[in-house]
Amino acid sequence: MAQKITGPRGTQDVAVSESYKWLLLEEKLRKIVDQYGFKEIRTPTFEHTELFLRGVGDTTDIVNKEMYTFEDKGKRSITLRPEGTSPTVRSVLENGTLNEGLPLKAYYILSCFRYEKPQAGRLREFHQLGIELFGAQDYTADAEVIATAAKILKDLGLQNVKLNINSIGCPNCRPAYHEKLKAYFAEHIDELCQDCKSRLERNPLRILDCKEEKCSRIAENAPIGLNNLCDECKEHFEGLKKTLDAMKIDYTINTKIVRGLDYYTKTVFEFVYDGIGAQGTVCGGGRYDGLFEELGGNHTPAVGFGMGMERLLLTLEAEGISLGEDTRPDIFFANIGEDAKVFAFTMAQKARDEGMRAQSDIMARSLKAQMKYADKIKARYTVVIGDDEISNKSAVAKNMETKEQVTLDFTKSISEQLK
Image 1: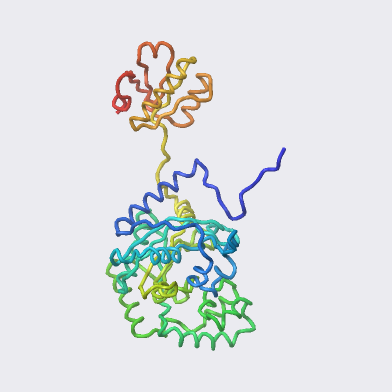
Image 2 (image 1 turned 45 degrees about the vertical axis):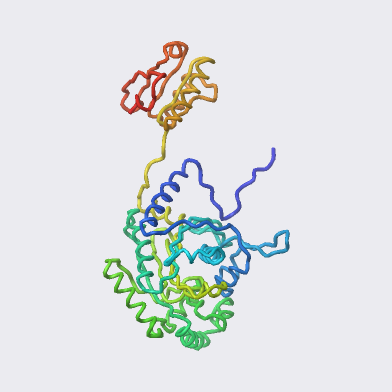
């Protein structure tokens, strides 16, 4: 016997018995983002590697350690997308979508790929809802993006997710802050991990995001970014807080949030849940005003977030929240005999044409086995068809919950008779 092939480490199947949860979640997410005016965009699963080197940043763990990069047959370097923002900006630039009017609001539900250590809530192939708002510089745009995430979590019934916000400044004030970070961490260089030693000169802000315990401990006493903002960034952050207060969205200022991507400026935020282990960030995002220019476009302010679908589902499960029930057949047509088997098959098709979920036996089972299967799939009605039912063009439909019986006339609408 040939050896079984298993799925790659860090990937996860969605079984047919579980897929309805994903469908229900996606349906709820699409409905909410549509209320805020976001329209769906779809981008390729892979992009030219340069897009992520320039967009995400070559000092990030994503670029240095986690990207799935390969050379295609044309000798081009290709990368499976590790995140959705850079491809979205690339697409908007390439297709001239900004000409359709500002602000431009886009959302996506897609799979991303990162070579990370698999654990609860973290996979090598994972799925995200992302929203991107292009063209608005005002702090109310940041608030709208945060409000969208807050409404999603609220409407899903999640009560114990906390919002953390911070500002990491802009190209005007960040260089001076970087110098202070360099000076501070230089005093502890022998204690830093190898990655952070290389980050010290290139991007010391990344050290604040290091997950190594010794680096996190050192970072606790590092200079605080909020204390080094320029007037514009201070006003932006104060405006954001004022707007969140007006919307009664609770938040905590967390000066250690910098996010793991180099393109962020000013506002950064995370929605965190403590009940699913170390990977408790269910949503993270912020403002990235320089990304369009970095990818060859004109200056275009932008803000958005990414929300992990797997982590959302884990959080809902931890909270005991159900998204709803799976669909089940409206009717199952059982049969006795060869002619009845074909007739039952045609009746199932007639019911489907009327918009019903219908099934009939295609396994050549005994009547007892057919009824057992109908019960297993939780069919609402069962109908047994034999020679007499064919001749009379009618049969009894039994409601499997109430045991009520209805005589079906096969010459008339099945759905109408079972209303």
